Image (cartoon, rainbow, N blue to C red; front, top):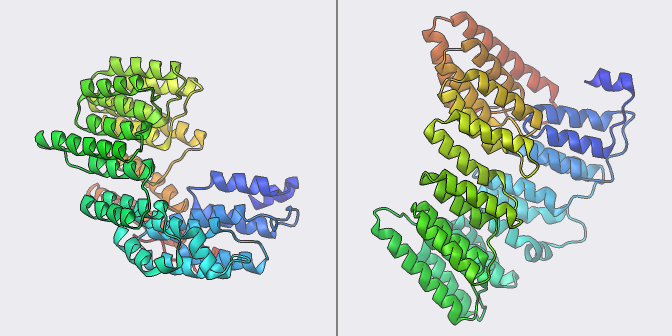
Length: 463
């Protein structure tokens, strides 16, 4: 790549660097190598006026838990006088929390004011604390979030947004009692809840509850109706999100007629359904085996000016997968490719890959794989895992080894079960020489990976 760029005299402008990094979002090692080269390229335009490229690379590296390298890049930005923004640190904090390193994330949040220009510690906490709280709650660390909130609330201006985030966090871990306790504390302090607060509580009651046996569904509906009554008493009007949450619980309970009835009630009240509302009802109809009704509702949705997303189409693909209907799935897939409304997402490709591999349609699976690569959507870790396991089941060891090696070279961390499946299969098939060759290449890759980036403290790729 380097010699080719030099030969043709290509100037790596910031826009070109950013777009290339976006394409390399699933290849952390190649992305880091390209970025390192772009900084030292003699014909490159200066990257000093933007931190976008650094932010993109930090997110790519944090995705594979190379947090030390991300910190080195932040320090490198400071040394190059590239202005860091909260976005830079938010990317790092979010990935730390998603990996379970909550204390390190909180420490990063506490120290980031050193790098942010003209902002003291108290100003940073007041301005950005809700992002830290929200991220902790989204990943299920509501106890840590509550602890930090109680410790730091003396320096904050308490408002509806902060309490709503905590209510959401407790609802996410199915502790409705604690969520109601924070709602009560909010009311005691004279802070009025808004429609978002009630929707969060409603979401916790409906989406997190178990619906089996059948009697629990009625109990959930009764509790939801009580929330609707409380909203009305306080002068808060339910919106499209409120009804979408109610429709979602009907969908989970496989109540297609009730879902359609609630949809009609919404329209009578003058509330226009959105994509979430329609997707819930379509999912319910698909899972109940009523594909024709779902297709009619899809057409009606489009005619009403609501554009479907890949999640809407995935409801159909999941039903086709359950029915083992390859023809139906491929027909809808081609329709998506030809149409301009919605392109297949990573989830769409993985659903199709899983179905085709399970049914032994390796040729079609490879076609989908090629389409996925051409679209730029992937492949991701799940895609490689699906393909390698599918090839192992068909005892196509050579191709499985090739994709396993490609996966390692792109910087993905193979799951332990993938490694063991490949190893066990090769040994049982008396392919010990192939295994030794693969092991040698892995060792060579590991050595090359270490020497190429000796200036960075890269951790070994292990699970």
